Amino acid sequence: MDIDRATRDPRILEDLIDVVELYGVYVVSMTGNIDLSSDAGIDSARSLVNQRNSESRNTSRRVVDGKRRAAYAGKNHGGRLRPFGWRKDRITLNKRESAHIVEAVPRILAGVSPLNLAKQWNKRGIKTVTGVPWLAGTIRGMFFRPRICGFVTHHGEALRDENGQPVRGQWEPILTEEQYEAVKRAWSPAARGEQSRLGAKGRGYRTIYLLSPFVRCGKCNARMIGATRRDPRTKKLVAVYRCQAKGAGGCGGIARVAEPIDEYIKALVIADQQRIESRKVEELPPWPKEKELAGYIARIEESIRKYEAGEYSAELHFPSLARMEAKVAELRREQHRYNARQDARRSFVADLAKEWENPEFTMEQKQAAIAKSLTAVVIQSAGKGVRFHPDQLTPVFRQDT
Image (tube, rainbow, N blue to C red):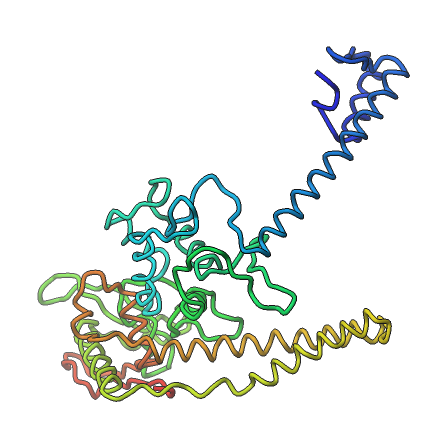
């Protein structure tokens, strides 16, 4: 075996030479004239490893350049396994698999999480390309991959041309660009400073109680939680909403049976969304800061061009560039939130009353439907033994609905 088959890194060879010199280990090639116990053999080994190292680096560079050119040409690349949704040629759609993806989009926008979608697909017998069950991370990664809407991916990101536009692949897309962006907004984590518990996504924790993300105490305005207690008459456990103890930030002064509250809020939300469906849902106007964002992007490009031409000094260019990039990031976060509001207006569940009773209409979808109408439900106190009455609730409607 030649020495270059063992290593093409000069640093590893020098470590091997040290071992030979310090411990007297005998290292010789079975073919060729490499003998690390002699100066001539060491020189020959160093020359051969350096030559093979240079050849390896050149080959690696040619492969990387070739993959980059293929990506800009929109060609397929990589992987022993075909991506889910396409046939083996990676260009033509697999009609059955791609239909599952398209069918899932409205449900994702209505509040289904990657975990629940994975559970539902496994229950329906939908298999991955390898035949193993779906995981939440696998589902999320598939929907977040730019390939799904026809964009070329390079180093994990959508590849862009010299004009900043995404490079389109030669394969058939499954989703439109608008559907892809809407799914990303629905499943992306809430931005810093964004209220997440009551939004259409990321309500902070999973719960088996319908109104846990919404209920507030009418005495202290603290968040109430879902719990169970034993009914003194029936001796059965019943769900309740209760204010937490003072040590947890509440007053502990209100606890109400959950079932009648859930039924009333459900009816209220269904009626509210039927009212909205009865008239055309007006689109929000275009985002008002679109020109401002485009202006900053243009100024960044102009600043870079002048710096590269030597018209700007580094002392002036980089501080200004950092400020403009921070402003662009801020505007894009604002644009993201605005587009999410637009998605919420478009994704009202058709015939919510019928869909509510569907076993596949998950708890998180119900909570997402409630969040489109309400931001909170304030539960007022009532005397001992007083039955439920709607006047004991104060629903807080969303301003944009």
